[in-house]
Image (cartoon, rainbow, N blue to C red; front, side, top):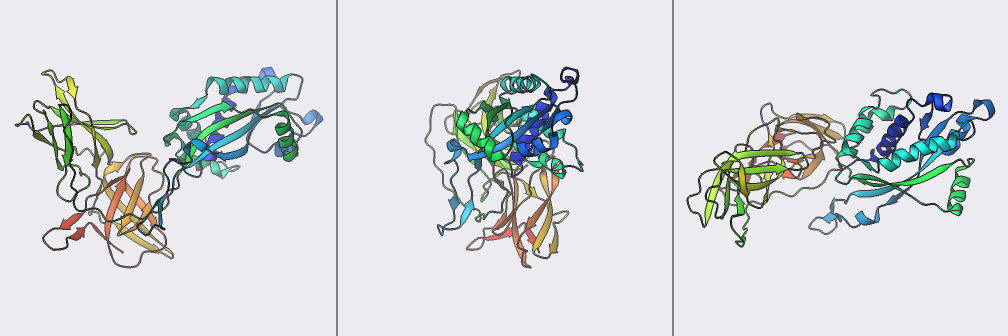
Length: 423
């Protein structure tokens, strides 16, 4: 999901690519064409009149509305008391823009607008690569606009929904009323819609303690098939190096398991143990431990059947498998108390990739690591208000996959042993 900077990032991306349209056309228009993203009354005041007129194209966000198709997606979840909100749904927005052309001579405004409309028509979707390229081209230090250095962390390129550009019809009365409200003289204008921008703040949430046991039954279907995934006792996810058991039917001859994460474009393979009972068989494999290229997260697990040359000839349907992050105890987490907040720095394995969502939970208090721009195994978390002194059960969550906790099963009730963070 995107963060609160996504709306500004959309304007910055549009301004970047509209500016590229006029590169090399200075001779046609008798001077450089300026691209701006300001209110029309400000543009008019800056342009002036008479001999000071210049060629300019202005992008103006005049209205923001909630997207009706996403209105009921991901409704808020509440705690057991029925009142405490645990997570908000994404804020889905439609952005309404005005594209206005200012020309210093006859026909120039029309020509400027024509080039811009052609670009929008030929590029109705902002691809992820386009967004990354436009935001990456922003100056890291712009004295005239400090915001430019922060837009790269908006997460706009990583949101699940693509950004689409469509025409938006405004009637004569609507257009007249709009320009009157803007207190600016009307110029050739094209209204269009950008949809949809999904904003989800990385706010702290409450996280319940993990369930210690589960009982899941599945009905057999057509062979070959996998019916379940068994993790080491008490775990809800498998850490790298853990042995996982896959149960199913007609698994004899299985060669590998495939672990796929489409969002991160990752596919990892692991060899499996031989299956002795063909009808009600089970196979095991070891979760790959590749810290730099196999991050934690939710993967789709499928069993593969390969021929003698290693080519996959058949595969089963997939089941989800959570690959857990590991919170390292060496070096130990560092804790810094600063007034009303507590900053905790931890080292994890495997490394967290760009665009992944990361949360640290101490007992039931959680804090987000914020946007991840590059692969890293060192993460900082800011807890507000400050945490009281004490020892806390620590759990790291990466893309919905929780780290493994140690449990003493020899006492009743069972007791959590760690990992612990001391504040």
